[in-house]
Amino acid sequence: MAVEMNKKPNWLRAGNERVLIAGPCSAESEIQVMSTAAEIKKSNPNAIFRAGVWKPRTRPGLFEGVGLPAFEWLKKVRNELGLRVATEVALPWHVEAALKNNIDFLWIGARTTVNPFMVQELAEVLKGVDIPVLVKNPVHPDLQLWLGGLERFKRAGISKLAAIHRGFYTFEHSELRNIPRWELVCELMSTVPEIPIICDISHIAGSTRFLQMIAQQAVDLDMDGLMIETHIHPAKALSDSQQQVTPDELAEILSRLSKRNPLFTEEVILSKMSHIRAKIDELDKFLLQTLSDRMDLAKDIAELKKEHQVSVLQLERWRVVIEGCMHKADEMGLYKEFIRNIFIQIHDESIRIQSAILSGKAEELS
Ligand code: PEP
Ligand code: MN
Image (cartoon, rainbow, N blue to C red; front, side, top):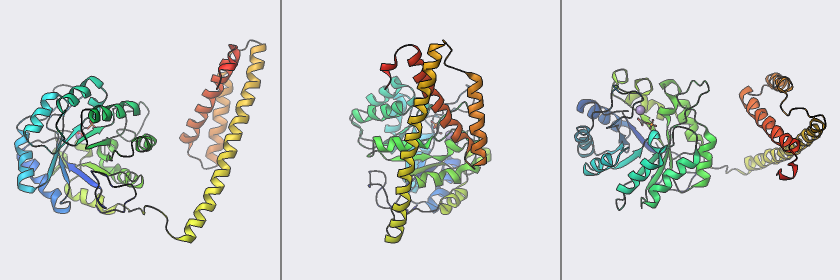
């Protein structure tokens, strides 16, 4: 997957190549592992081959991976096909077994990153071993927990660390299995710019039909690589069958990705760009002034409510405001969810200000 460089090179993404991690959700049999790996290799000779040896399943009794015998197959992938191999570890003895069997990359699953005790135990057994460790985001959107997981391995002396973005669980309805919350990825990138970040598009998508779109979004954000679950016969997969692609489909997804130039270079375009950006800066100032004016009005209302001992929350008024805004947003062609989220935030802030005034703590507002 040759693409133009934007970010600084890092240990995972040398030169112009983004890394590709492909392979089945679970290692199921020698033939499934070897045939998938051989096919992936044909169009991606530098791919890292992934396969789950142990699978964290929501309910017991589902396929939980074949365990230790799978290492023999991964060794064959490494020795006979020359691909580097990666697997998930969740317990200290998983790490020991993976190290004994020459696994090249370890990844920490989303259900492990949520638990600092478990992450710390894994970090302890890795002290003094410099194997690359890839830390998936926790199941829920908690950036600090994700950063905390990375930090625990860093403190244990792991120098080749990367993050894997696999999306976040949500209560809200979504066609995706896990919502991407790209803003958290941007925040991770700016907090730890030295840590490469791979997008696990399969666990975000949950279904093959969204893979292309999510892969493109990851490239648009200049992420350092993609993890894509690939199975020689997805319909027969023992786990995550809906989201796995065949090696041919994998090649197709990669070939359809639009490349992005790292920066604007032509003078004319640069000048057009700075013209648009100047207008955006003006509008941003205007937005801020408008928000400030709006909050001043909330303060006036709070004074009236205080004087007449009226409660802060007026549900009927809020309903009218939000419905009016949604209607207007629709007319203006704005994405309704986006506007709803903004107005929920504005209303929250207005309530915060008004509550402070009603309880006589206006001086604590900042
Ligand atoms: C996996 O990669 O197969 C897996 C179990 O992922 P996650 O930890 O992201 O759910
Ligand atoms: Mn999976």
